[in-house]
Length: 386
Image (tube, rainbow, N blue to C red):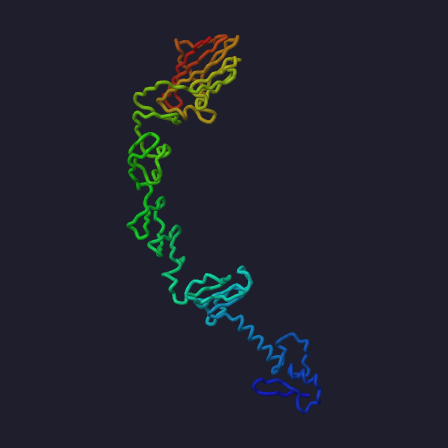
C-alpha cells in the first residue's frame, strides 16, 4: 500500500488509488500522511510532511509566535523585554510592556488606552493609558526628568506660573535658603554665619534693646535663650531680674547687694575619720547635727569626680564654714587636706586647736587662696557656739 499527494498548494497524503478500500487506513493516511504512523507519538519532529497533522501543527506554532512576538506598540508578557527580543536588536521608542501576571494584578481586562481631546475623568480602569489627541491639555513639559537633577540636595522650585527649574545645592556646608526676588527662582543660598540682620527695639525679657545677630538666631522673637549663644556680651543697666538662674556669673566693678541667702547642707552625720567637703555640692556652709564620734581630717575637694585644683583658678579664693556638733567629748578637726594632700593652715591667733568644745557647736571657718597649680594658702579659725 502506498500514499499519494492530494494537491500541490497544500499537499496532503491520501491512500493510493490502487489500494484496497479500508476506511480506517484511509483516515490515518489522510490525517498523518502514513499508514504506519503511530497516533501515540508526542514529538513534533516525527510528524510526516506532507500531512494534515503537520500542516495544523505548523499553523498553531505560527499563531503562538505571532501572539508572543513584541512589536513597537506594546506587549503583554510575563517577563520584561530585553533588546534581544527585537529585530533589529533594541527596544523601540514608545514601546509599552504590561506585566501579564505580576504586581499589576493580572492581564488587562479592558481597553488599555484612550485617545481623546481632554483628560478622561470617568470609565477609567487600572492600566488605562490616555493619549492627548490635540496637545491642548499639555502645557510645556508635564514632568521634570531625573536627568535635570545633577547633585544631592538639588531642589525643584517654581519660577513662574506653570514653570519650574532646578536650584542646585549650595557649594558650601552651612548655607541656608533665603528669599530673594532678584533671582530667577526667588531663592538664594546665603552664609548663615555672616548674614546678620539688625533688629531694633525687639521686646525681650531684659527690656527694650537694639541687638545684632544672625538670621538663624533672630528669625523669631528674641528670648533669654538667644543670649546664651550670642557672641559678645550685654550690658544691663538698672535691670530687675526676678528669680533668675545664673550659672557661674562673673561680677566686676562695685556691686550693691541688699540681701542674699546661701544654701546650707544640713546632715545628721557624726564627724569622724576623713570628712570629704564637696564644694560643688555642699556649698559654702555644711552643718553636721549629730555628735562627733572622733577627731577628723577635713578634705576639701570639688566633688567625688572633680578635684578642687580643676575647678579653682589661680588667684581665686573661697571660704567655707564647717559646723560640727559635740556632745560630752570635745572632738576636733586635727588635720586639713586639699584633694587628699596635707596642708598646714595658718590658724587665727597663731595656734591650732588641740580640742573641741563639749555640748556645743564648733564652727571651723577656712579660707583657701590658690597661689599656683595645686598650691594653696589656708587661713582657719575655730569658734565655739553654745
